[in-house]
Length: 224
Length: 224
DNA sequence: AATTGTGTTTACAGATTATTAAAACAAAAG
DNA sequence: CTTTTGTTTTAATAATCTGTAAACACAATT
Image 1 (cartoon, each protein chain N blue to C red):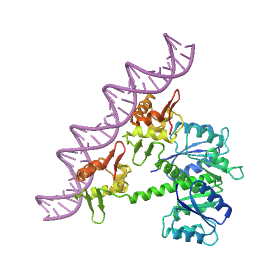
Image 2: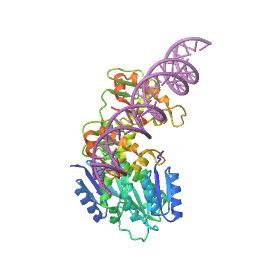
Image 3: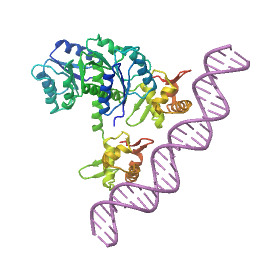
Image 4: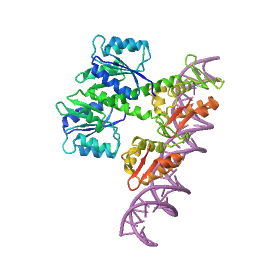
């Protein structure tokens, strides 16, 4: 099925349960938390495909949470705002949210938004056929083109590259890469990432050497 | 640059101008109308690549307009809805709209949606217009021609080939192939697919060897 | 310059996955 | 009923991928 995991963060337990159940009925997996810190934790761990966050939360509120997430990820974010709450939409979109929904809302509408947003972001990813300076990824065909070449990548290499690509320009730690590519329950050596990076680099040739960068003490990043 | 023409239909002049200017800045041509009838006229005349229509319009409203357009065209349509009209959106997707945006919205978001939608639909078109060299399938006659030869395929082989053909360039998992060719309720060994692929490959001769590819760890794909 | 922490490279065994061939099974045709 | 044809399963073999380790290289720190 869809197999997408959606994070719901709101301090009103009632709301979280309502949304959560509805989304699960629609075929999504959900993770439910009641404050911003917990949400941030989970997003950092990886494996989340979309987040629904309330503006008003104790501690880390919706804005702050969004800002934190945007430091390392392009995760689609839907913001929940209560009617009457000051909500400057322009500011919101600038801050990095992708959608917003005002309470009260019909859960069905929310599900539609979730679907639309997931479709949108996956469509964007799929159609990166606009030559990003030499690198072209086709997620349907599982192929890569770089500088006219079409190197044969293995599954792990391909997924690793996709993850780096989706977060292009951002440094990803080995741990983040492991949970993103290998899964959150992977137990194994962090050097594994190094090996695959190495293989990727050689397979991507000159482009790999130039754009797949190491950040000493931090991890790796792909610069487009 | 892009050279795409976008139709904007809304009775609120302010909105039309706002969207229009923004889209033109983004490199699109725009046509602006203030009611449904005028919009329908222009679409029928042709030359429109995408339409943005408001739900609330005098005369022909957004729903009716969409329904009329859908009678003769798959034109990508983005629906604008005012806050509070949210419930109606559910029907929208069924009625044939491709995207929706709630007012108030950030113009930047709208442009993003337009881009995504145009890319999506142009990709779909490309797919049907691709000239298939080498492989020709006649679904009525249940025959295949490849490199001048006309290999005799069995039913399963033929259907398997059709499925791969319809998704050419896309990797399909064994599971996807099983449900597509054998039916969703098929319970059986995934290796079955392998066997048929093997036979297809030999029957399709050189073409099969060259174009019917296996993606390690994922499944199979047909490259035209 | 030596030390320590960190990244790279290489090689390889074990694990996973795919291919092939053959046999078992099922359905249709003669 | 037998034969033929098509389909599925199984098992053996082949190909390939992947994680780890060890040696090496490089950077930062003292």
